[in-house]
Every structure is written in structure tokens, then in C-alpha cells.
Image 1 (cartoon, rainbow, N blue to C red):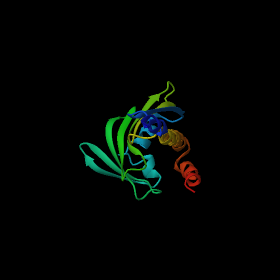
Image 2 (image 1 turned 45 degrees about the vertical axis):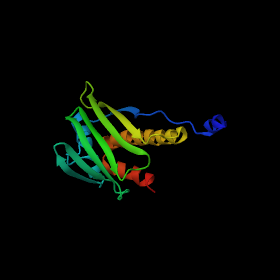
Image 3 (image 1 turned 120 degrees about the vertical axis):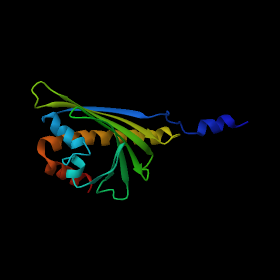
Image 4 (image 1 turned 135 degrees about the vertical axis):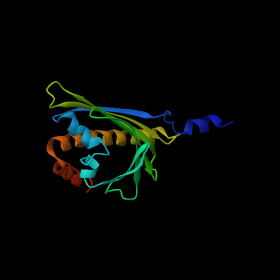
Amino acid sequence: MFGWIRKMMQPEMAPEGPVTFDFEIEIATPAERIYSLIDFASPTNAKRELGHSVEQVSSNPEIWKLVIAQMPDATFLETVTEATAPLCYSYRSVAEPQQGAMQWTEERWTIQPQQDGARCLVTLLVEAQFDEPLPMSDHQDHVIMMAMGCNNAVEKLKLHAEKGVAAVREVEAQQFR
């Protein structure tokens, strides 16, 4: 009898399936340098240079364990899905334990050298899967946080490639206060 009232009081639910984020930026550095900052196997991987723990746990498939210094209780398992130096690097990321409503992400970095060879157009394409069902208001909050995180990742990659690790450390010190 009052089912329609109950239905009206329920929160609107978010659409199901992953959300896609797409960012691009021009970086004034050759493709090989940019690729080395993204590639988990590289000694100059950006996470490694910033003092985070990057450790290979499997070679077939290639899986890396990433522990961010500011999040020591979370481990991110990064399964490499494509590594085509110096043009493309992709991986699936799953946090243990799960962080918030994020189940997994798939990140694809594409590096397009420009004609001069000293600059590249870098694209980050991310698919992110959140818990389902999720109220629309929570979903929107997670989408905003994810978009900000992706934008920060692209901006920090540019800063790292062009200005070095010290410049990124300075930005991170302000972010993690």
C-alpha cells in the first residue's frame, strides 16, 4: 500500500560498470624518459625514485607490489597488461585491503613522441570500478576524487620528467601535510 512512498525515499543509485577517465598532457622530455618513470621494472620508476616500495612478486604475469610511503597499511598489486617501450604501458591495480569503494583500476599510459623528439603527448586512460550498488551521491564523490587523483598523477609525471624528483617531493610534502 505504501510501497510507492518507500520507493520515493530510496536514494538514486549510480549506473553499474566501470567509469572512464581520460587525461592528456604535453611533456618536454623524450619518450624513453617518460616510459622509464612509468615502467615498474625501471630503476628510475617514479614511485621508486620517490621512496615508495616497488617489488616484483611474479614474472608471468608480471605483477608488482606497490606500497606508498604515506599509506603503509595498503598494498597495491599492479598486474602489467602491456609494456611496449617507449610508447605504451598498461596495468591493472587492486588494493589489499580494498581502499574505500574502489575495487580496481586499469591504467593505460600512451606516449606519442612529437616531431622534434624532445616533447611527447602523454595520455592516461583509466577505467575504475567502484562497489555496486552505490548511491549516486557517493558515486559522484568517488568520481570527483578519482578524477583529481588522475589529474595529479599526470601533473606529477610531467613535473618529475621535466624538473626531477625533488620538485615532486616538494609538491607531495604539501599534499600529505
